[in-house]
Amino acid sequence: MNMKIFSRIFWLLFVALSCTSEPQNQEKEEAETATEVPNKIPVVFDTDANNELDDQHAMAYLFTNQDVFDIRGVTVNATKSGGNIDRQYDEAERILTLFNLNGKIPLLKGANGSFLEIEPNIGNAAFDGSKAVDFIIEEAEKCSEENKLVLIAVGKLTNVALALERKPSIESNIRLVWLGSNFPDPGEYNLENDIPSMNYVLHTNVDFEIVTVRYGKESGTDAVKITQADVNKNMPGLGPKIKTPIVGRHGGEFDNFGDYSVNLFEHISYHGDPPARALFDMAAVAIVKNPNWAKSYRIPGPTMKDGQWLEQPDNSRKVRVWEDFKKDEIIADLYAGLKAQ
Image (cartoon, rainbow, N blue to C red; front, side, top):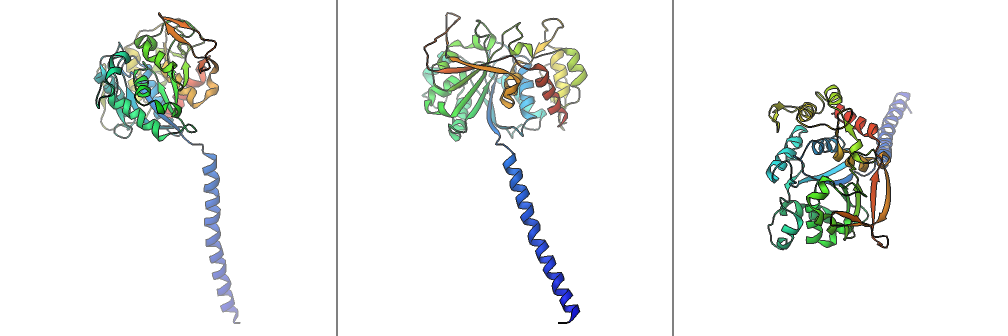
């Protein structure tokens, strides 16, 4: 065989083998990468967004952790502070807009009223809160007992209780993480806005986790505090920049969440020494991302009667209680997520 022809054939074989081996290696690398990435956590976030300022920071935390959370939607409810459902909706919409997510993540209006006021009407096609309630049901039905929908509720439990009453079969598909109560002590804002809704949920079999508040104690989310000086130092300019600024609830225009955070902290009262404000709701989201940022234990499901907790030691139905939150790690993760946008 002519040496020139032989060399040509050898070269063609070399090129052919090179072309076939490279995609195989690439496929192997992609397969290895795929096995290393865990499934995202499916989440619906249920909030009284206009109540104070922790809801907004919890939403920001969710939105900066979309590599962890599959955010199915945001539902709102109205508690005593922050106005009616329209104002709660508007504030949630502002935060979605600041992260370029308005229209991309569903936002639905939930209950203005209480569980006992609304429950007699849930057989109707439309009732107070029906859009949010039906959305929660639809998303729960897409999940399973093995891959539950994590329902992070950071206000009253009205929307949740109505969804469980309207469609009891979804309870096995839901993991409910509720920011609420001073358990085992009485009181707390979210709880007191609709105690019957909480008692109703406690009497179902839904996986129920209580992320404690515990005003004035280091063991609850009240300890996950941030000062105005911290905010002024760390937050300005953080988060993605949007083209058309929003008008904040206290006025002013903002094209990023960090500047809006500073504004929110300028219009809030402070507690403690040094004066600070707790980011209760954000801690509830953080422990779903990383359970090592708090401690938990299981107890027989209690109930509340006449404003006091009634323990039920013989109750086979168990709930999980979260306490002792790692403030520094949680706050640092908020900053890191916003800086990465």
